Amino acid sequence: MSSCVFCAIVDGTAPAVRVLEDDDVVAFLDIRPVARGHTLVVPRTHAARLEDLDPAAGAAMFRAGQRIARALARSELSTDGTNLVLNDGRAAFQTVFHAHLHVVPRWSGDRLRLGVGLLRRQSHDPESTAALIRDGLDRLTAEEHS
Ligand SMILES: [Zn+2]
Image 1 (cartoon, rainbow, N blue to C red):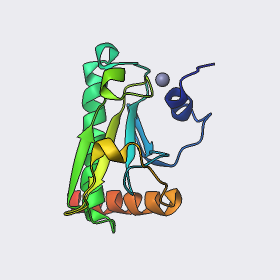
Image 2: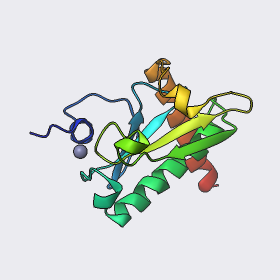
Image 3: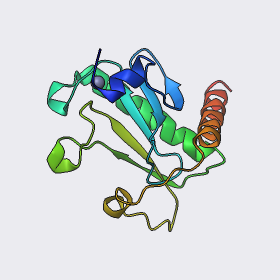
Image 4: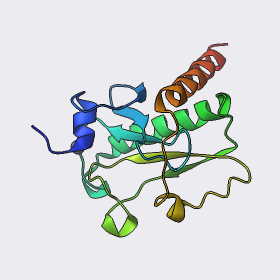
């Protein structure tokens, strides 16, 4: 049994509102989002730090993060921008030691400051938020196939 909460989410023994998954990564809503739609992308294979992360898993994580960012812009959340953030190590505010990429939705004039935002987090109806992101992913897929 793993004591890593992200490994537990990956193997389905801990709950999470998933928005995307493939052979390499699982993406789910952050339970303490700094903004509505804040998503985490985690590699399926445990790696505590960047130091331990297979570069191919890192590439897969970035690819999924980019896809979610593009989906958010196409969703009804209608984002204007994105912060893709990876906090590596306690000195960089890493709190879960299973490397992960934050996809933080941004809107023009949202005044979000990531430092303060990390302290003041609130939930934004995860199920409806995930539905909007999935809808954005569907729109992105349709666009790619048209
Ligand atoms: Zn893990």
